[in-house]
Image (tube, rainbow, N blue to C red):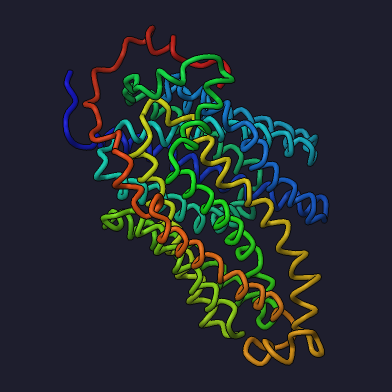
Length: 457
């Protein structure tokens, strides 16, 4: 059947609905188990380890996961990942019910789910590329960002209520059911397999060669490569700023005010996601991306300038409105410029490079604040008589000074990106390799579909 113009919204929203339900269930479990770890260990360090383990193992596995995603049927990859995550939750529930649950069990489950997520994310995004017309990439990615924002807002509040009302064990049951719902929706749809491209043929070979091709593809395209390096620096800065906001606000306000400010994170993400969903973003997506980076600098200035909740709140809100715009614009560029049959390995390597700086930022923000900025901005400190006249002196103002220092970098990255012709003209210089989504063919025979299921996933 020849391809047709347009987006298969029915299939997209069927998949999205199942994955959103699963995402919400995972949010409930993550919050509930985080509270369990803190209560049973009284250790912030052990809680932090769970966060690190949720990301780091997956990043290390990314190139190989992406290569396997491109070899296998992406629908079955997502199906297997949902069932695997359901298995993890069922093990948690059994151990909890039998009073055997230990922190190391949670560490093992988090590592396992991190690896599953490394398979699921590129399979999910590459599958969407097969269903969505290029002109709708911005809006569809806005829908994904909106779903993430709704989970960020709702999951902690719902989980907190459910922990009091029904307990952690029943929250785990709810999460188990959500994974089954997500897996079930995948049985209702068909995701077309991509045709072999010239790049896909060049990448064919051993798993090692295919895993390395994601890096080769990116490195051969200077515009994409430089954009990715800029993103790694941006993620480093934003992760440091994100860690710093809460202790900074605690320096001049109470816990209730901190809660209000942090709630604006989810509200901003929701508004930014809705903005992309309704408008699709800027006509030249690179402008939306670079403009978003520049806006983040302004937000950092608002957050750090004065110990004023209105200024901090405005900065945080605009900051997290910009994040979905940046992410959705970037995602649309990569979907348009990467052949469909190699998107799994390219997107996996792309994510690994862009996000390896996040743990670095998370870990360095605290020592920088404690050892350098906070002492300098206390009464009698090195900067109290100069910068202190503007920013203020006392608890939390050293972190505010750190925010103002970090504010230089997103705008600088945006300026360098705009002045770099490879980045500025990226969309014009690299041809679009995805112009339209193929019409969904009739569902395959059960035997054929079962034959594609990857045992490893």
